[in-house]
Length: 282
Length: 170
Image 1 (cartoon, rainbow over the protein chains, first blue to last red):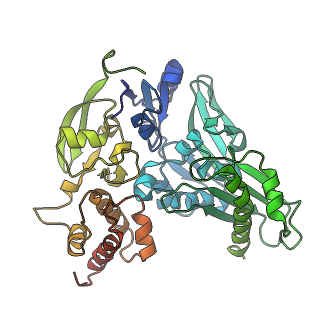
Image 2 (image 1 turned 90 degrees about the vertical axis):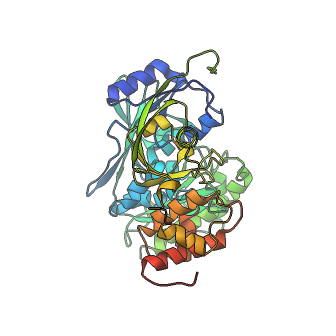
């Protein structure tokens, strides 16, 4: 059981949620799907007096437009999978949702925004959001603001959320581009060891702007412009793995894999994502 | 850390509909849904395993979706409609998924059953002819300490065949 004298708040107004977060600051946390926060409370890894539950704030909606998708803070992975196919590059979020570890139960509880706010390096969500140039919607005592995903993820388990701020949703543009996604994990029940998202110009449009974003490799997603290494036919040089490894300054090290292993496989997952991006979009 | 002995622990009344019956329980804000189901409502079919979201033994349906009740604060389930394993059988008869597990030795010791049964119901509501890989993927959130996975997959296969109107040897 949870051993602290926890108080559960379920505000129905955003201003109330922000005021609670601002007042209780480091003694409070936001409760989204609960798949990370609740077991951490049970294990005694976090010492909190207050949880602010977002589920009555109306953030449980995903809005799909022709050129973008907005996902509210409490939209679950299962909701993403039940929606019609997202347009353009936004479909990556549905691919990611379908591969989230933990089976249907976790997909019915966990949220993209919760994973983003928690910023565990060994998850696929941060890199997916960076790859899609997602816009993070934040709300705090000073009102609403936005920030690009690439600036939101600061370090392992650390994001650009100021005192009293919470993440209310993310928006991704639905670009016309080729997409390749690859995830390396050693068992179905394991978290990813490395992920790669390749975003490539449409077929026939060359390779200028081809980018691969690596996840779970370092404390933050790593975005690599492939222009220096791709030739005109979309081929990589034979020593590309060395080039990729050299881009990774401080690989993430945890119980799943040492940093050295992650650096070693980074080139492999990059190549596989690129291959999928080319082959699946012929 | 604010300890139980030094501070009053926040508590509240939580109203839920459990297995079709409206109920109201007094619980502390820090209580997990699995704790309230087992200890206050005495519904022991929901098992407390890892309390970490890994094993699936505490799975229930909350508003029609399978969830791990060790990951939910009971206070957050106020107003929810919950089905536990006790609510699956109707009129004393096993439902078709339970029957398929029984017929194919999918029950084993029974500890992981809530997760296996509710994950199967979720899968078969969407796909009545799943490939084995799809079945295994749907069951991935559950750990069987008897390691009886093959029998469980066969049980799901049989339940799917039953839904399609096919008869399979038990």
